[in-house]
Length: 317
Length: 195
Image (tube, rainbow over all chains, first blue to last red):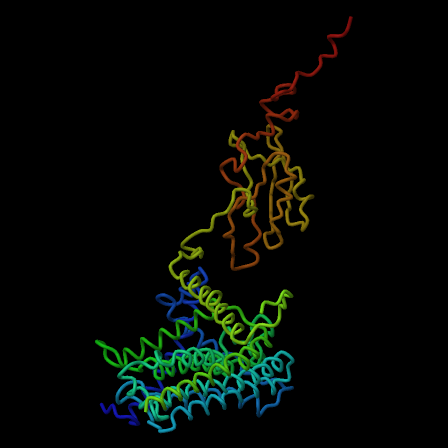
């Protein structure tokens, strides 16, 4: 049992665990959302409804995977594959525990941000190739939202990178042994949280797929496994953002009694539950309110955060 | 320098920023906390079929044919329910027994057409046909949804316990002659006015 970074065991187990975890999030989200809305979630299929995930997967696998004749085939098929590839690639640089990880890239942060930018393509391509007015609206708004919130997602991380001196995510976790970065970089944490919610287009930033307004947004025309890939891809994005928040701001696997993977799991789960709470509680802002919130409030705030961090670091040297 | 004219739009950037932070804390963070507390509130779900929902007594569900307090069936085959039914789902045929009481030879309701409107219950003069708050009537075959009198007739009086049509009506049946019903005067003796 070789728990070395980059071993075949690591790659296989991280892939399986992450995908199974994202699929189980279907059940977790539906139950948690139900409890917060004064109702029970699905509790019939299997003990506590745990086999609901299996039932959903069977349904998605056996549904007719139909490509509309009026759609642009290349983009239509490419869009869900982009999101899955991009998010799974992002997991390759996340350090889960000492010795558990796929790649310790010295440009880890940049890699994750680049993958997030590529992820915006899937939403844009999906909506554009569908030849459907709701999909087009969804992807138009998604394009603008994701591109603009990516800007300060990167800038909010620069404070963390400056405090560490490296883009390597494992170095960032190791540098938090003296104190988690959420304390000195609280504003950066808040901005990264908001930008992460926007990047995985979860409520309150789910304008791309606003269920009550534009049918299903960019994935209106999708069915079967292609829709399943968008669906699980969204939960994978959720897991990715939660993992990144624990790695960058909350010390990754560091904690007193329990083994390191357990601490990582606990911290990431807290954030996943927080994202589900965001979905249960906050209403959706209007599209122009969302854009002005990003450009006129969060971007100056993140630049200010970077400025102050830089001044403090330079004056401390 | 206090300006006597109140200008609503000219707030400083810092004031706008502070206001946005205050709004976030006072509305969004408070909302998050309040919704989080719902985790500890009992859910409103009625877990059917282990728990049954509470139906009110006038809820228009399964149709029954009732008997009067004496145990005889109330239905007099007057056809008023079949006439009142908006979808024509009731079929019946009158026949008489040895005492002269009218009763239905067959009474058939087609529940795949019945809309549970309750017009038949309102039309019935004897309170025979009634709607009960029961809804579990699913069947697998369409033919099983046509119910005969044996499926509809119950042993009790249903929702109305006192109604006994033949005790009040003027028709003479075996055991009750003209003038012997409740609140009925005896028939006028025309011969008593003879000189």
